Image (cartoon, rainbow, N blue to C red; front, side):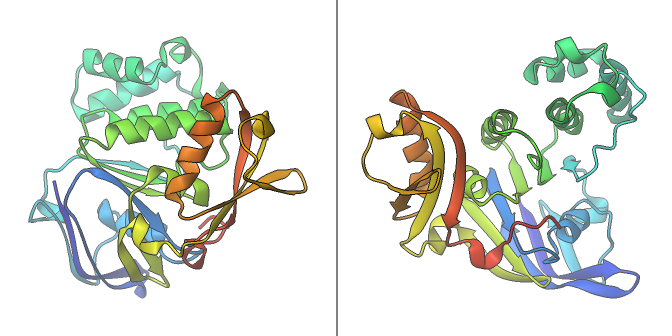
Length: 282
């Protein structure tokens, strides 16, 4: 699978938002799309799914123009796009029929997302985390080759966010995942490749390590941390760690938890990605 965006421009009502974008994605993995509020992340995602037509340039999947491709794309936007009055079971079976797959295939997705207990419940009565799991399951009905996820863990508690990240990392072994996040720690934890944009233009495409500045700080709230390491300073309620790169953050959290410490929150204090991103939702 490969995606080629070549000199692509588009926007709304004749007003150009994306300008002459060119980048290529050619191997499975998670590609983190970074950009400040209004940079054009959501517009790019809509263009990649065919929701927006080009003003100029092309988007191609496996060397076939987007409007002619038969590649199956899973898209999860800010809105779940599931009728709130339906039960989970009815909704998933409905989307299964739309995708032309059997109930057995839908049942397989239910198993993967551990949704069996939620099937008889009305979608409108689910928690935010439960809704997100159902929405992700819906998006993957039909064996999609590309996943485009616009802030899939926004407003979710850390446990559910962690479960979704683990799922995406598993799925990325066999497919391309384009993923945006408002959480810088999450972005550096989950992705190895970056597509950074600003004001509708490409700033950087490449490995996350290529953005390292050699100075990266995170703050952790937790218990038992002092019994595991003394390599921190205290700033209010946070244990602050100075790291050489964002890649070390995940290793540190894993070392703390495997040694018996409990981690409740991880917060970026300084991050080499900050010049591409802020904490506002697009």
